[in-house]
Length: 439
Ligand SMILES: NC(=O)c1ccc[n+]([C@@H]2O[C@H](COP(=O)([O-])OP(=O)(O)OC[C@H]3O[C@@H](n4cnc5c(N)ncnc54)[C@H](O)[C@@H]3O)[C@@H](O)[C@H]2O)c1
Image (cartoon, rainbow, N blue to C red):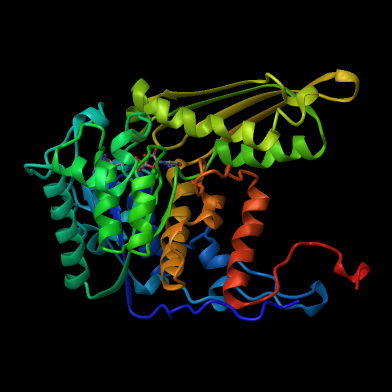
């Protein structure tokens, strides 16, 4: 049964500005990739908004358009970029330092990349302990800093002739803190900004500024940023989409594919040991135990939610789950992850799975930044505000509306994403139910 009507979605006309707090390895790899793809030098592999398709109707209908031909999305040519960083280097210098992309490619993109210079950041050493830089705003209160960010946002939009903006946090992982009373309501949060409450992190000030300006905000790191009630309240008031936390790129991507397989076949789990080495600046920041704690919490939640030990005590009660990240400079951005998975089969006989993923952190993250920025802009034009659960597909620790547990299974997440797009068009949702048996 086709839905009666879809959702009215404004067309993606004009320029979309993508604003990135944190112009490090991920952000510059993303921006350089868009420039390279625009010029036909490289292909934007890994991006659903560029390559994804969506089946409509019955399998026999043979109707599978590209997603970008199905819903209105900004094109790569429509995009322009801005951001903030504590280091003053422009994007060419930052990308060169990050060492992800080859120098020969960066050299070809030098004019466009050099033109993007970071705006002064809102930064506090207490929240990211391992790095320090000079390009930082000054203000008497956190509210004053938020107002400076709002001015940056408006100026960027005006100076670049953008119709719309989308912000994605690509800054360092802040230290682990849970939400406190100041995060519980918008009134308390705004009072906290005026009184310089120590529990308000810099990333939260960016998120506040974005939402006040009605700009969709996505958090690519595991720290709270926008994941607390005061921000959900502000998102509702300003009709703005929010999403987070933590790009699902490497080891957790594999985990959310393998764990559903164990669960589907009802194989037991004794333990899952995951370790990584990486040598980029992200690795250096995560070498601080408090920043690592944010990452650890984000990575650990996945298995419990997928395996549901309370429902399957014989299979999943008390499994051991350990996650380690070791900073190892020689590897740079080329992370290596190992997983040792101890499982049990028929009659409890033990078996092991070993995974060794030699990945590239920012190469995996860049298309996710693109998709999230574009889909969040789509959500805004479709009038979808608050937590965008349908984008959980991209996130390690997906935000949910209050009271709901997150869905981690990658293929359920994918189905939800595509069904949300079908819903906006009023098309039949695809549930893979063999409806022909019941007609
Ligand atoms: N690459 C991946 O696979 C991946 C996956 C999930 C999450 N992440 C997260 O994405 C973020 C970016 O990763 P990266 O590899 O680009 O790290 P990076 O260290 O290369 O870049 C982060 C940048 O943020 C800047 N920064 C820190 N605090 C800031 C602030 N308050 N305002 C503005 N700039 C600030 C730093 O100076 C740095 O240049 C990290 O939080 C990381 O944990 C990355």
